[in-house]
Image 1 (cartoon, rainbow, N blue to C red):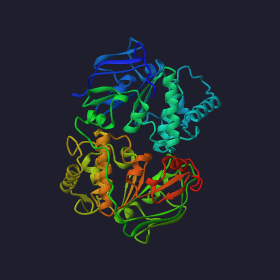
Image 2: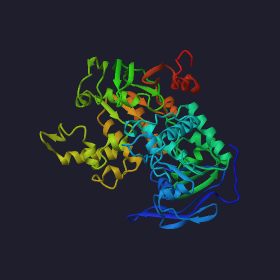
Image 3: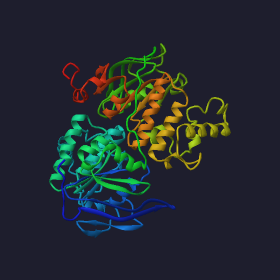
Image 4: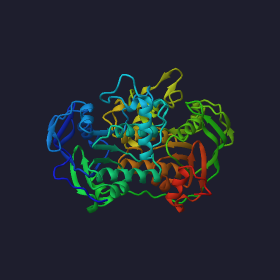
Length: 511
């Protein structure tokens, strides 16, 4: 990218310190974005990135330090103050009202909104922005009906709707096809060329290296360094974040697939909106195999996963485990047959966020020994189970009785992975396992998936990170509008542009 420079930073944070109940999240942090600059902010989970950006966005007040906008000191008491000053943020956990529609969320907090809402005008504006950024969404849909990826699009559009001068993007390409990502970066470059500032938070090092001017890394709440992107490497940035050398790649060994464990034949599934979300999908997975599933969020992946683990009924079709029919069975039977599920929503679906580590560790086996004894739970054995997961899967937590909502994203995902993988699953359904994780946690999760493959598991891996799918998958399917557009036996040999065409709906012959 062509580097932009301004005489005075568009926004500058000096000496920012923030403490929570005696824990220092940020300590004397300096960070600035110049007009025309795309500035990446990196750091492992818990490094203080979100806290720093929440201060800039007005959600938190710093205990020490000041913020300057165009060289003038400012104080943001609320996000409305920040938005009014032209600073917008798209959070990793979206700030949306789930009981409202997309278009209603778009105007929440907008100053001078008329009493009678101009719905048509708002929807037309949403369509204009959606088309401009390649982020398609139904403006009339209820937010609670949307997938995680679709909700991220709404949050992004919500900020773009306000014409912000400084845009903070947290993992903005997680739900885009390669072609859509290209279009988004074209827009970001156009914004920077017009003098806007962009804070880019991403764990995709290739994006950071190719699409940013500067990189600032945080480590344990402090500045670890700021460098020009053109003068560094992916390995150097990883070492800056972690304080040690980190190997980014994982090695997928060649394995001979075993017998077919899991078969799906012509299944059809309804979505929450009452329309068919999965249409005549068929596939099979063998032992020692990872079948990857690519596709833009909202094309039926969520409904497919829920159907495959007994959480959503089928309209028609068959699901077989070791040749035995499973459709119509309870989720408990799926678990007993060795089918385990790692959902994309760690806090809302994967875990009971208000419960502690022990309770969440046994949530799928409280009815069986040695944890369950009839109507009673053996809490000593339950604690031992949780302790094994924490030790085996390197979960960092203050105690076994810590509520899981207090864990960082990486540790929460490790706990979730540990709970599922410790049962030696025969079939593993995994959705977005590394979404929002730092370099170290991402590598760890991928290594665990490959270890499960070597131990004989048949894995369906759904991800919106195409690099991740190509690195881990033995075969790759592509889903669009509820249908499989193609099944690639050697995905590494297919150019990503062609996979992107499949993700956009082109038939495999055309791609």
